[in-house]
Amino acid sequence: MKPLLVMLLLATSVQAQSIADAARQERERQVKLRSSVVFKETGPEPSPVEAKEVPKVSKPSTLDPVELWNAKVDELRVKIKDLEEQEVALQLQQTQLQNQVSAPIIDPLTKEQGQKDVAQNIQQLAKVREDLGSSRKEFDALQAAGPPKKQSSDQSPVR
Image (cartoon, rainbow, N blue to C red):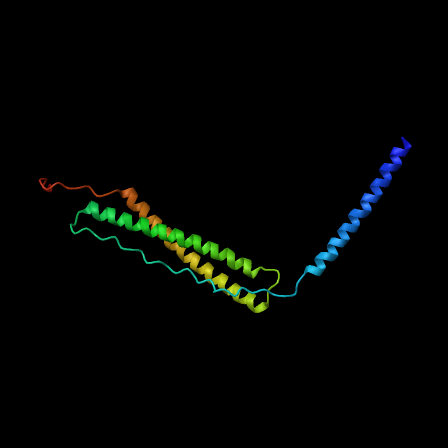
């Protein structure tokens, strides 16, 4: 029993020493790997997402109120879809810009320009979200009201 305990204590002390040595060596290796070189992307600058013009749905030649209502609803659907796509694109761009600004190794001028880009992106995102909210409200109001009732030509207005 005693030889077993001696072997376990010896093995534990040898193992503990090698782990400490390994940790020390790893720290030294990581210190040597740290670079003072700043890498800067040389590709084209990310362009701000510009608002797409909503394609106008051709209005029917007749002045049928139901067809006009349907055209307006379709136009709002297209506009909402485009605004949602712009919102997602701006959110992705925001993440990319924030990653560039918070990079561990960055020079002050690049960081300052990145912060300006982040602020500009936030403003664009706020505008798109505002437009999206108003478009959704308008769409919901149209949906709640429903299409106008068709009046038959043989009915005369009651006085």
